[in-house]
Image (cartoon, rainbow, N blue to C red; front, side, top):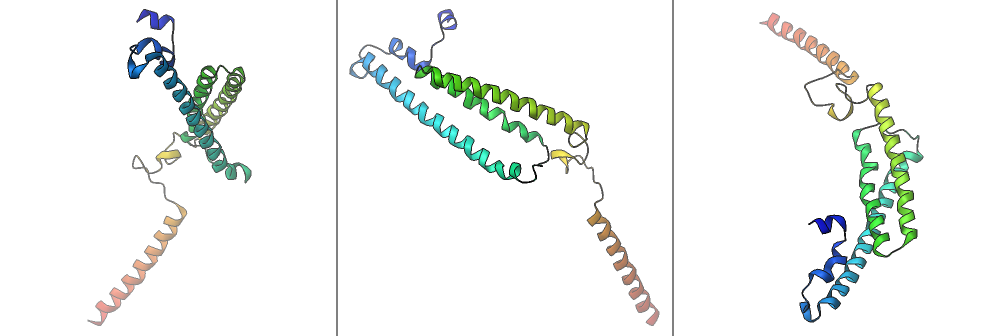
Length: 179
């Protein structure tokens, strides 16, 4: 255990040491083949993660391109944290393929992720100050806690209901007076 803690290796790198010599005929060759397959599978999944990243950016582009105002909610942190997994995978791909360029791209992505986190955190603090979140009837908990603020529609509906009741009472009075 101590040796692993001092010298961390990925699972594919330690495979040759851990497989028996006669595993699938030739242990070292099997380890090399499995390492190549694992690296290419990881590269494909990494590309898929980039695809999902670009799809999510495209999905939010209409909000940014329009008037630029979308109300803050705590789900804004999903702009930051899923991308940390993509950044971690970028570093792992850079290490697996021994590519300094991919590792530099990972560093640049890290800087953008930290900037995005700072921006989202700052906007969250502003939303708290402006009572847009963490306040009754604001944010994600509009329907929770039993708080109900009357809306304009409800007021109009209430006036219509009162007028309807008044006309029903008049009709009831007329019916009773004819008996």
